[in-house]
Amino acid sequence: DAKTTQPPSMDCAEGRAANLPCNHSTISGNEYVYWYRQIHSQGPQYIIHGLKNNETNEMASLIITEDRKSSTLILPHATLRDTAVYYCIVRGGVSGTYKYIFGTGTRLKVLA
Amino acid sequence: DVKVTQSSRYLVKRTGEKVFLECVQDMDHENMFWYRQDPGLGLRLIYFSYDVKMKEKGDIPEGYSVSREKKERFSLILESASTNQTSMYLCASSPREEPYGYTFGSGTRLTVV
Image 1 (cartoon, rainbow over the protein chains, first blue to last red):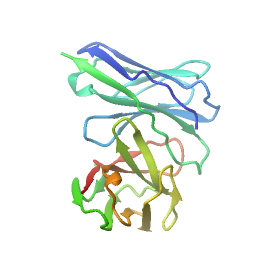
Image 2: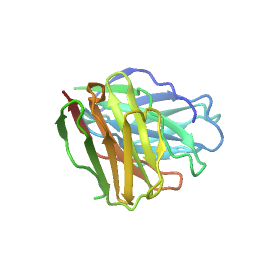
Image 3: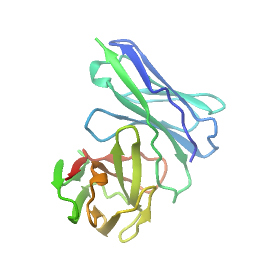
């Protein structure tokens, strides 16, 4: 599975968009990009995933560059409850390779 | 609401005890996973299972074993608990086919004294 690189921490003002970058320069053609977040003392929560196209759901938007070597998770209107550690993961689309490899993520702090 | 349920939120055990951590999912998922999480080290995969009675080692299986006798239940066993196994343990499940997201339980914080 491809390795990802994320900044260790970021701050964002409440109500503003939070843009969390992820570098995955060794991603291969059949690997998806997944984002999770972990609020203190809870299990990680799935947010969104994508392959090539940009994706949006009720929680966030995912922008993947054309060369797929990086992506950005966007929380359009960050709230205090979005303070968490955000993990970017890439993994293969080949059935049978099941495991995720979690890095240390980005600690997002939303400021009032 | 779909769920992954871990039997205990907090657990304190003595060194040398045999410890069972239980995880149950109600989503009919084929895959189940056990991770541990330690400060500065992130989440590390201990074992996973892609079917009943099937198991595979993750990155740090030493000192642990697992059991999956039924599809919905995946147990993590510490054969002889040691202080370096004090950690947060997280169970997760997922469908077999890509793309899919994991659903995690709330975690068990185990302290070995």
